[in-house]
Length: 238
Image (cartoon, rainbow, N blue to C red):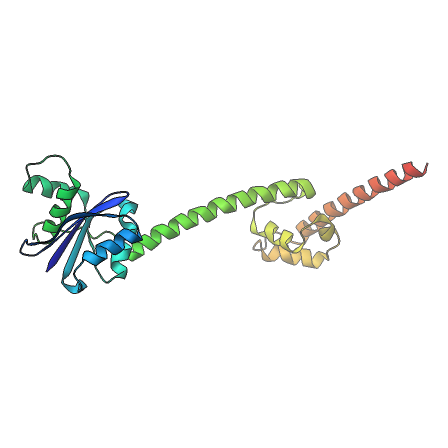
């Protein structure tokens, strides 16, 4: 059995490879935290992944790309809790300070130890869940910005609508504006269509009375605009 210990850092990792008898296969070497470095690691690994144990320290996102690379190439990396490595270091060396090259050897040694229990807290599903959570957060932020933009537009083109409904962002209002995106279209819409649009998207809370209220306001606004245009034309004729 071959044991591969990897000490993970931000930009580079240290690796040590030995067999289960303690014979050094590859002394500590450093590889970069990118695909070029991962391919270098792969070139030093034994050809058959079935006889290889790979261990590394749980270091958050610094190790995610490496873990995924190892899994894609047929290895099953064991992720150790940092506290386990620290306790194992104190028990097996007199050195109190952390040294990456020594830690790589310690991690390899831990793979052959029956005392140390690996902490298997990272998996494909956990990684994907974290990614989806971040994506959901970005979508929520984007939605919030769009709602603010929509409210500003309505304040310009149909400000009176806000006083007729509970919220501009509620489902029924959104559905109304989706089909009738201006006060002109609302004013000229058939009352039955307006009523059905509001009722179907408000669980029956908004009825014909609410549709009539909104349409009447839109009609009044259009009439006011028309009157202003007529007055302007009349003044020009005088």
